[in-house]
Image (cartoon, rainbow, N blue to C red; front, side, top):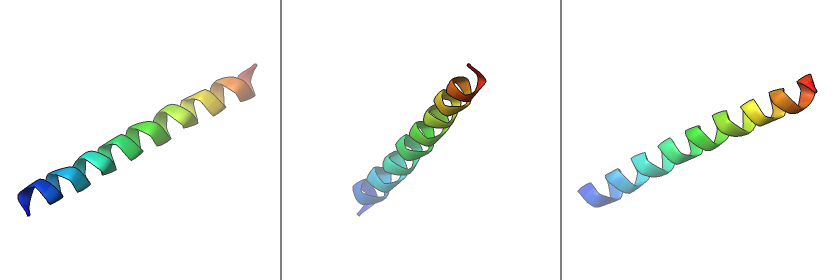
Length: 32
């Protein structure tokens, strides 16, 4: 059960990092 929570937390962090990085990429494209 603990491993499941660790997995969920890891997925949430990876999604957050992916969202922020993609947002930065979009901002860079818009500034070009």
